[in-house]
Each structure stands twice: as structure tokens, then as C-alpha cells.
Length: 76
Image 1 (cartoon, rainbow, N blue to C red):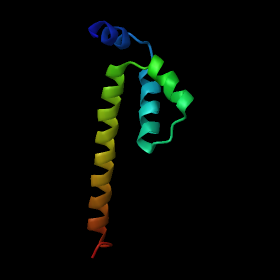
Image 2 (image 1 turned 135 degrees about the vertical axis):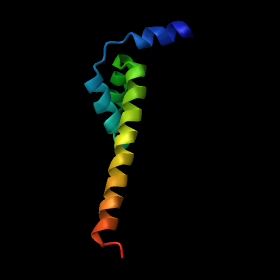
Image 3 (image 1 turned 90 degrees about the vertical axis):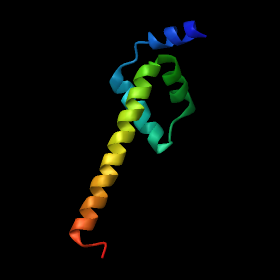
Image 4 (image 1 turned 180 degrees about the vertical axis):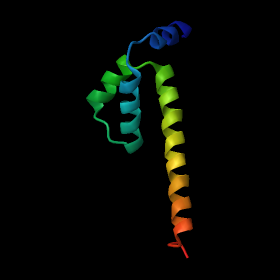
């Protein structure tokens, strides 16, 4: 099992390709063939980092949006 993980961590998928795959997965619209291609190419370490980064940016965007709405007086 650890050999499989080491082999997966040695994949040469680019971080930009990983960010694109994670962004599409946030929307939930991904073709099966594209998913299969990603599974074979992407580095799982990059996927975890991209997922945490994407989730952090999403939360930051929501906090900023709520702060803007509350400060503008729209939510009264």
C-alpha cells in the first residue's frame, strides 16, 4: 500500500492542472473521461494542497461578501 502512495506522489501532473481539476470539482461538473485522466496524472499531494487552498479562498470570498453587504446597509 505504501508503494502505491509513493508511486502516486511521483506523478508529474502540474499544479495548475491540479488547481483546474479541483476548481471543476467544486462545481461538481466533471466528465467521467476527464476524471479518469486526472486520476492517472495528478499528484495526490498537489490535490490536497489545491483543495485546502481552494476552500480557503472560497471562505475568504464569502466572508468578504458578507462584510460588504453588512457595511453597505443593504441587509437592514
